[in-house]
Length: 199
Ligand SMILES: NC(=O)c1ccc[n+]([C@@H]2O[C@H](COP(=O)([O-])OP(=O)(O)OC[C@H]3O[C@@H](n4cnc5c(N)ncnc54)[C@H](OP(=O)(O)O)[C@@H]3O)[C@@H](O)[C@H]2O)c1
Image (tube, rainbow, N blue to C red; front, side, top):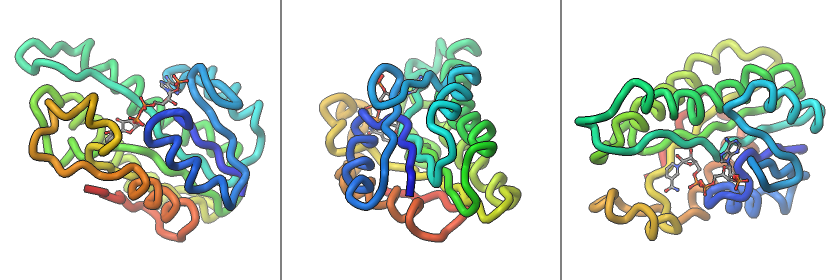
């Protein structure tokens, strides 16, 4: 398969590339790194990415960020950071990618544990992760031509604990290689409309 990995140079993306590259052609995409560049906050940039790559069989998105911080002072503008980036960035990868994906292809997006198991400062990300999972469930029954869509909702990644340990006290870190195998299940398996929770 020809598989696009957006966020290929990140902590999760690198492991997904390692998992899939032994069996498939991988197009690595990042904002500044990779074979092709995209800024998922821009629909124009997403269209240019698909034009550059052409037809493909699967897209995996392991990217997206949003606001993390004190709830008592959180503003609407801070909520919109992640709505524009992690949420609509990934949704637009699907909406625009529909025009380029081959029949029986698949989209795999990334949400996260905060939709189910919140941490202090994470309200905006909890909202965005839940919205992404909802989009996947809804879109899965309407995509035509055997095209599938799933999300992977990882717990905090073991390899990211240097960065996140103080926020995720008590959470069970998940090895990134275990998470990567779930992306393989989404891409190489046959399930549709699933939220693969890995925590
Ligand atoms: N790490 C965790 O513990 C964890 C747990 C649960 C969920 N998640 C979710 O998993 C996803 C990936 O996390 P990660 O820790 O692997 O991220 P990461 O290490 O920070 O990597 C982010 C990747 O996304 C690319 N990127 C950043 N902004 C972009 C943009 N505007 N357009 C296109 N590409 C962009 C980066 O490319 P450049 O390097 O070129 O900028 C990089 O390849 C995120 O949605 C995160 O919320 C992470």
